Figure 1 (cartoon, rainbow over the protein chains, first blue to last red):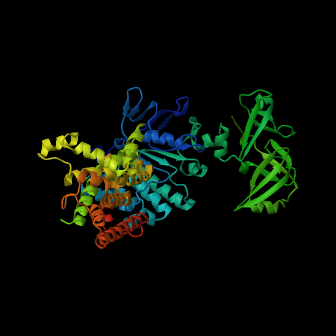
Figure 2 (figure 1 turned 135 degrees about the horizontal axis):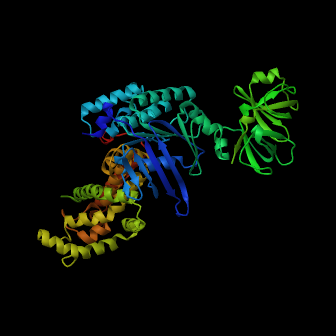
Figure 3 (figure 1 turned 90 degrees about the vertical axis):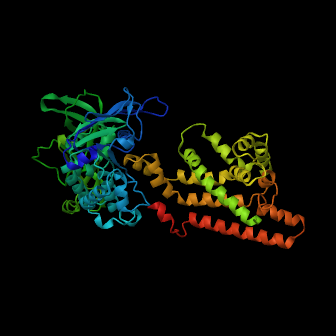
Length: 377
Length: 226
C-alpha cells in the first residue's frame, strides 16, 4: 500500500530528520557547509545571517544539491549516504519544500497547483485531499485564480498547501513569511501549527528574523559561516549569542570591544574597559578569560535603562554617565545615542523622552544589569 | 501541383518534423551540463552562416546514388533520393534546423529553475516536468519555432536548386518558379508570386512577434496550459 495513504490515515509514527552535511566549495578547497542537525517532529528553526548556508542545507536535504560528504535520514530511512553511495532523487524523498520565491506554477490555477503532487491518486481521493487542504489554509474561494491574481499572503498559503497536501515526511520552509505583515504572519503560523498538531512531522524553518524565532520557537539551531554555532531553546541561543555576526542578526544593537581588567571569581563577574582610550568600565558575567584579553560585549538597546539623574539604591552594578548625542523617532520607538566615552544605542519610548525631558547634550545615566551584557567571540 | 502548393506542402512537412526532432535537441542543449555542449551548438547553428549552395552541394553528394544516404534510400525504397520531394524535405530539415532549435532552446532556458525544483520536490519526473511546466511556459517559443521554420523553408532557394532540381509538381517550389519567370522575362507573373511571398512573410513575422509580446492569448494555448 502507498505509504502516503498511510500518512493521511494518521497512523504514521513520525520520525526525526537527521542530517550531517559536508558541502565543498567549487574548487574543493574547503567546506562551505559542515553541519550536523537533528529535527524531531515539530518546528525547528534554522537561524543565522544571510549567506550562512541555511538554504544550501535545505537544498541538500531535499536532494536538489548533492553534498560531498555526510548522511541524511528520516528515522531509519536513509536518503543520502556518501559512504554507502546512497542518493535518493528528490522525486522519491517525500520531503516538502517551500522556497522563498514560493515557485508557484504561474500558468496553473491555485487548485491545479495544489493538485500537482497528487498524480498517483484516484480522482476521488485527490478531490477530497485538495478540498481538505484548501479549507485548512482558508483558500477555498481562490481555487480558480492564477497566482498572479492573488495577494502575497494568499500565495504563501497556496505554496504551503501545495507542499503539505502530498503528506510529506518532512517540511522545509525557506523564509516563507518574508514580506507579510505581523498579523497575516501570525494567522498563517497558527494554521501551520494547527495542521502540524495532527501530523507531527519535523518542520525545518529557515529565517534570519528575530521576530519569527520568537513567534515560532520550539528549538533553534544557529548557523554561521556554514557551521552550527549553537542550538537549544530560542532564549538560550539568541539571548546569549556566542558569535558576533549572530549577535548582530539577533538584534544586539550594541557590539562593543573592550579589554578585561580583572576577574572577580567570588562575585561571578569580571571588569571590562570598553573602547580604546575611554575610561568607561562595566561589569560583565565571568567567562574564560584573563586580564588583558580582548573581548566583545553585546548589549540590546532595549535592555539599557536611561535616567536623568544619578540613580541610587539599585541592584544594577553598571551605572554610566554620558551625554545624548542624537535622538531619532522611528514609529513608536525612539533611538537615542549616548556618548559615555564609547557610544551606546538605547531604545526608549516617546513617553519616556518627554518625561525625562531628554534633549541633545543633556547629561544622562545609563543603567545596565550585569547579565544584560553578553560576551561574544 | 502548382509551385505555391508544393512550397506549402514542403514547408508544412519540414516545420512539423522539425518540431518533433528539434524539441529533444533543444531540451538537451538547454539543460545538459556536458562541457562539450558548444560543439553541438555550433553544428546546429552552421546552416545560419553557410551559403545554401554549399549545404545543397554536400546534401546532393550524400543523396546521390553513390552517397551514403542515397544508397540507404535505394536499399529501403528502391529509388534514389536526389531530385525527389523526400530529398527536398531532408535537405530542408538540415537547412532550417537552427530556426526551430534556437527559439525552443531559449524559451526552455528561460523557465525559472525554481519551478523545475518545485516540480521535482513534488514528485514529478523529467517527462512530467517537461509536459506540465516547461512546455506550457515555453509556448511562445514553440510557436516561434514552428512559424520561423515554416517561413524559412518557404523562401529557400539555393538548397532546393541543388538537391531538387526543377521538376514541375515534384521539386519546383515558388522561389524557383519566380527565378524561372524572371529568366523568361515574365515580370508580371513573377511579381504576383513575389508579392504574395512578401505579404505572407510579413504576416508570419507579425504573428510571431505578437505571440512573443503576448498581445493576445490564442484559445488553443489553453489546451496545453491545462
